[in-house]
Image (tube, rainbow, N blue to C red):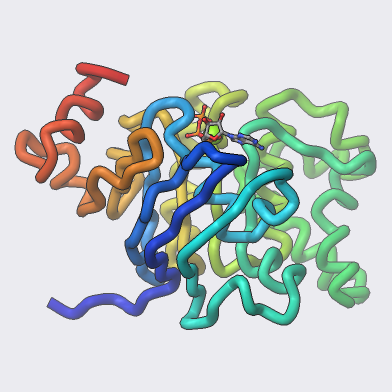
Length: 254
Ligand SMILES: Nc1ncnc2c1ncn2[C@@H]1O[C@H](COP(=O)(O)OP(=O)(O)OP(=O)(O)O)[C@@H](O)[C@H]1O
Ligand SMILES: [Mg+2]
């Protein structure tokens, strides 16, 4: 079997908040164009792991890190520009974070900052991102309305559209469906499956069924330990390598 190229290589990653070790010696790879789900109970370190990848952990008081993380073979701690890294690694937080501007401008902001000024191209980019986030049909007639006037679920999709507007190579989603109804969640899941052809997706979810539906592989974190990472069908089978994995995905604890 041919191993797909590695997009992310994590080796010996340890993270502490003060003296509390929240990620314990993690080593794993993420392949190009896969959807990797990261599952685990509350406080197992899932969000922290995503924060390492775009270096937002840098700004957390008292956080220290050991080990290496490479993206496209480059050590992310040694990159010249953290801003470029963050463009490459898009992040969607659990709750929508809107900019205080119109729907259009929320999505146009990043491309404009990056120098895209042609109005037609900009409008095309905005439309494409809103479509990708399954929001276009609901907002196409009111693009000049404030983003904050949208419902919670719509704002979350606007957040996804904004993350896509940077044209990230890696898209990290942290429990994106927390404020979204099941029908919209399913629509976004379909969107994510399609986006996989364009990017690598890391999906933190505490809905194990969402991991089962979407992910090529699944990583199980428990109290900062990487219990197991494998193909999703193996993780959800009757015989994953670790008993704890079986118990967690089958709701025996968590
Ligand atoms: N800024 C911080 N300062 C100190 N401790 C923190 C900070 N952020 C997170 N922690 C602690 O690190 C541990 C892991 O937190 P993290 O948010 O990564 O877990 P999680 O798996 O995303 O949890 P949840 O499912 O509840 O979102 C927890 O014990 C948490 O209290
Ligand atoms: Mg979290």
